[in-house]
Length: 275
Image (cartoon, rainbow, N blue to C red):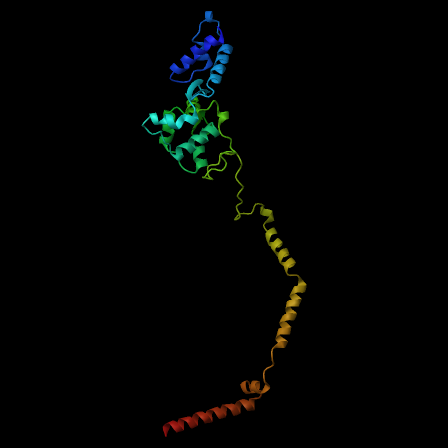
């Protein structure tokens, strides 16, 4: 069968189907007498894709096969045909789905460890009901947690042919939430300062600090500081000798005379008070 004869058959089949059709499924439309092989079907699909240039629809290959769909540049006008609003998904669901897509196979505890919060059971249930994810195995650890991976329905919904068409990590590195890190860069090591890393080297920090102090304040600086203190003491004016003698008597006789004079003054004050 010629390519020009195959094109209308394949085009009609793709338009009539409710889901994408693979090359194998399209091959089932023909019998041996038709003499159609997969190479001819692939050539017909390529020709149909070229025929869509400049039109409002395109022939797109997704995970499950080929399908006709509306081009992205005319979608804003075509979307007005449906009154219902498109589904909106929470950020938690999209983050969980992104981690499964980029890190698959991955377990639920591993997702919770990366996101830092508990993954709601409703999120997992929603993605399983939409057939975006499925259990692909179990981790060989205590508890045998389930390993999740994406499906072909996930690729079809997001208009992807394979996981290789996902945005690269470099393109999504500047997300708003810095905790959502999908790259494999290890986190910086955190050193516990309360405990010594090497028990035999506990005294090394003290000796290092001592050497640092010696480097910052050598012996010559101490002598210089002592000399400055001595000079400052010499610069202070000497107290008056008479003042010192009045405050601190130098002999016992002078101390006695001072005591008698004080007693006399006290008695004179008492007599004046009685009078």
